[in-house]
Amino acid sequence: MKKYMGNKSKIVSAIYEAAQELYPRPGTLFDAFSGTTNVGQYFKKQGYSVISNDVNATSRLLGEVYLRQNALPSFDTLFESNCYSIQRIKKLTEEGTFQNAIQEFLSLNHNTNDETYMLSIQNTNAFRLLVYLSFFANDTDYIEGHYIYKLQAPDFIWRNFCFYGTNSKYFNLVSQKSILSQIQKLESCGRRYNLSASLLPVIDLLHRVYTPPYDTASLSEAIRLLHNIAAEADNSNNVQPEKSSNASAPTEPAAHQTTVLLQAAEKLTALSRRTNHVGNRMFFSEIHGHKIDAINNLALVWLRDGLITTDEYHYILCALVEAAALFSNTSATYQAFYKTYRDNTQQTFRLIVPEIIPSEKEHYIYCEDTFELIQHIPQTYDILYLDPPYNWRIYDSNYHLLNLLSNFNQIADSILEYESGIAGAAGENRTLIREYTNYNRRDTFEDLLFQLILRASCRYVIISYSDSRSNHNKNSLSSVNRIEAFLRDETYFVPGSYRKIELNSINFESRKSERKDKIHELLFIAEKKTKEPMLRCDE
Image 1 (spheres, rainbow, N blue to C red):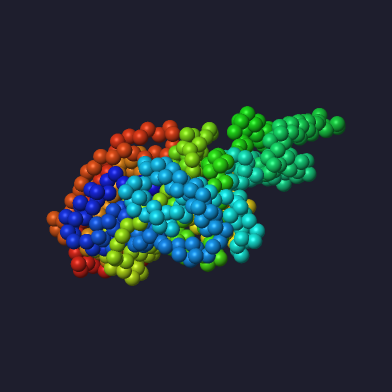
Image 2: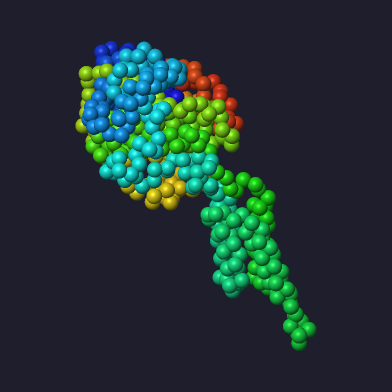
């Protein structure tokens, strides 16, 4: 997967060469922040055993397929089942249509897959299934009666993430936040000045603006009412008592209510001038959205009905997630989409072939907090490779749509509840708690990184770092100097073992406005002492 922040595909060979100098024979690599698993895949090809960990569900899925699976899944049970889809494959084969589809699949995927690998597996059940799912699968494959498992939302991707989807309409969350802020101020003003009854119609109108069906016309009406209430309050404040020649001006609290009301009206008026409050999500084209649904649904019903194994399910899902990333209407992340459909969304949708790496060694996949995992991981490892998120971005949030597909089996039975929490242009479930880790915080990430290394049961450490403008301490030597000083510390590391390797790369920026600058990729390398002072858990 290339459309992923921090992808190390361009420098993975240099990482391996550095590891070879440290440990010439194939050993065990622990990739603690594995992301796309590209580093782990490269080391697996070289004969290493790989331990892979990342909190992202997508990374876990990629690891389950590219790392843990050592042979192509057979899909024997499915092909022996004679289910509806298998019957269609047999009929298409007899008609000669299926062979033509295989050739088209090979042709379309020649830039995304290794052609030699595809040719080597084209007669397998796995390959034939990918071809069928790419070109022939649709909602008739899982209509009522074909399978026992009942789908809760068979058009889930289309209806939430395609322009014409029935649930794709959204209200801008920034605008919603602004409205809620003014509602809060008006409620406070109402309680303080006994205006709650007068302001209730205004607040009701404001709620209508950001809740479906998003009646934006209510915003103008709310502003009009607010001005009327402010005028009435102002007139009331300035009424002079009939029998008092020394009547004073309105008290400050009384005048203040008018000010609060007019300020709210002003803020809402400024908000009304914006035109991007409401829109429709455009993450996938209509055709691609329906295709993703069909493939996702079939894989799920096959799994739930016992026609495919978990490994086989992961294989299909990996092919689907890779394709979804390739054909999505995004620059890479899933917090935004292009406002017009790009060329890739108009191409023929097809799955990407997961290229299984043969291996005789076991590989282990985790989806946990690295700091917690490293204290109880049962496997031993020779090299610890670290490429943590040196910036404020929450990867789980940036890749929420791919994570949704990767984790679909776990949420399928409660998918309607999940859908009820979808909001904003990103279509992210806003009821989920996605917290920043200490690696996302400028003031804690270095110390946490050092503690992580000291707790690791390894001999060698390789750290990736770049001077990307999105990093903490961007273009600054402060982090580099601290990392160097730590790895030179002879209390923990073998004297003279520290090295730094500088590599040139192109900066990844998902936002269109960001310039793709050349950056320095740095590799920090050191050998840990075999016996080191114990570090207390509370340090």
